[in-house]
Each structure stands twice: as C-alpha cells, then as structure tokens.
Length: 390
Ligand SMILES: Nc1ncnc2c1ncn2[C@@H]1O[C@H](COP(=O)(O)OP(=O)(O)OP(=O)(O)O)[C@@H](O)[C@H]1O
Image (cartoon, rainbow, N blue to C red; front, side):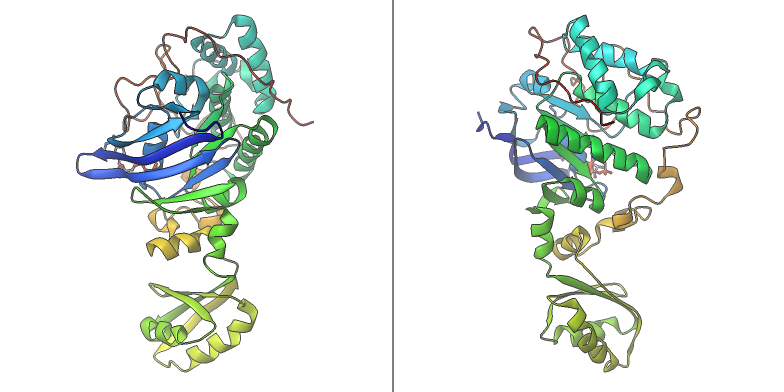
C-alpha cells in the first residue's frame, strides 16, 4: 500500500489500443490534498489515464494506486474513495437533479436519511439551488456540469477526478466550477486530479501540473517552476521572408537564452525582457531578407513550456481553443441564457448499473460506476460539506 500521504501513484502505466500507445509509461505521484492538473492537447492520453485511475479501464502494463488501493486488483476499494466526473456527463434528462442525486446516494449504499442530508449539502455546494427540482432536460450546459460534479461527491470521496470539467463552458460558468473545485480542496482537503487542455485552468487551479503529450509525461512541476524553466520573459517576433536567418541572428545574441522557430514566429526566452528588446530589434534590422510584422514581450506561459518540450503549441491541436483566453468556438459555449433548450444532449444514464460515462470509447465492458451491487458497508458521510458562500 502507498504512503498515506500519497493519494495517487502511477508507476510506468501503459495503455495500448492495438498499435497505439495512448498512455506510454506514465509515472506520477499526487499527494493528499493537492490539486494536480494533467494538461495536454486533444488525444494526448489524459482521459485514458484518468479512466485507468478510476478503474474504468485496465492498464496494459504498469501499476497504479488511488487512496492506497491498487486500481487493477482492488477496484471496489478505489471506487468507494474516488469521485468521478467524466467529460460527457451521463445524465437522464427526464429525471430531476435531486432524483439523480438521491439515486446515486442509494447506489453507494447510503441510508435514505444520510442521502437526504448529503443532497442538501451538495445543493448549496455546487450552486444548483432551486433548479434541482426541475427536469435535467431544462438545464444549461454549466448546470449539467455542476450536477455531474455533485453526483461525483455524493459519497464524500477522498480523491476527485475531473476530466476536462470546463470544456465547452463560457468564462462565467468556468469561473464557478473553478471556485467549487477550490472550495472542495481548501475546505475539505479533497485531492483533485483534473485533466485540462486549457493553460489558464492548469495555471490558476493546480498546485502541480503534469504535461502529457502523445501518451508521455513530458514535464512536471508547479506552474511557477515550469515557467521558470523557460526564462523570465518571452519575446515573440512574427516575420515574413527568411525566418531561419532571423532566428540564427537572434541566437547569436548573448542575452537570448533560447530560440524556438515555429512557422513565421520566433519565440525567444530572455532573462530581462525590457532591456532585450532594443538589441533584438537591432539584430533583426541587420537581416534584410526577413521583415518584422510584429514584436511583443510577455511573461512565459505554460504554452511556452509545452512548446519548449514538444516543439508544438498546445493549442495547435484545436484551432478553437485560444490559449489562455479559453475556448472561443461558439459551439463550445454551452451555457445559454435560456434553460429551455440545452445544446448538448448526452445519452441518458440508465438506471442500473450506471455506465462509466456516455462515451463509447475507452471503456471496459465490465466497468460500472458507482460500485454495483452497493458496497456491503456504506462509506461514512465523513466530514460535513461546507455551506455555500453568502
Ligand atoms: N477505446 C479506444 N480505442 C481506440 N483508441 C482509443 C480509445 N480510447 C482512446 N483512444 C485513443 O487514444 C488516444 C488518447 O485518447 P484520450 O481520449 O486519452 O486523449 P485526451 O488527452 O483525453 O484527449 P481529449 O482531450 O480529446 O479527450 C487518442 O489517439 C484516442 O483516439
């Protein structure tokens, strides 16, 4: 068993789908009480590792524990201690929010009285309020996410897995989810493992970030540590003409620590941005075969870290995700003014057993969530949930 301070441990975890290594030897450790951000572009392997850690997929190789229990050999123990909100909330549009929460509590073997108390606490915690008595079909995208988060919390888990909890939400709904995740972590000490493709989300929420690309963990550390590896400041030059010659000229400058060329853009790491601008401009003026279109100075972001370890921008994989400013594509904005016409209609959650998620991929056919039949001894309600802020 892992040390009690280690909430999640993965050792050389691998998952193959035919020839594809979706997760390729990932080792990581998350300490109890941490928010760990698992950051990577589409298809990097985030959901696959999450599903392995939640016991919804078996690893092809390697070993993982959650709350000290082995995900492959002790899945029931893991499920009692882990809460999961996957990308596609599997909600039944015909039920009300409180009916689903009550059902979930009973699946976990909580008594009717405990379930009711729990539902009351969760109602204020995830800010659904009076909507709980309405049919889920009338909820906006953001409300559905919050209900799914509440469902993951019914049994008071030690570790909460959130797979891209804010993808598709507008900035206001995203901020609400962040606030709830922070409260769960700070007030209940809950460990949170959160996958995201949003740089800002990892930067804002996570104590530590693991960056995954093509199934491999390519960098890990606190957001500040990771950004420090890039240098203090970043200068970005966009050019036309012979970008390579311009890059070489800039490389020869002593004050430039690193040069990355990506299409027409040259990204420079420098320790003192303001005093580097003039020498950079002078060096560029001496390369007549390249013309400067734009030159800007900014602090490093996690995207710069991703660029330096993979040679690509994290946002390259999704043109609609505009880096730190979050999703921009209108179809990804699920939260609407009207609560009458939800834009996303995930398949309904069948009453028994609850499926591990609505996505047909990345599931083992035997996997069900929560444990069914209910656990012989219900988990104790544990620490009371905090009430929502006034
Ligand atoms: N059941 C499956 N069968 C075959 N390939 C799969 C399956 N599940 C995932 N994959 C593939 O594994 C790779 C990793 O997928 P995964 O869903 O883990 O990525 P991700 O980082 O979560 O991306 P996204 O943000 O798009 O969900 C992808 O190439 C995906 O197509």
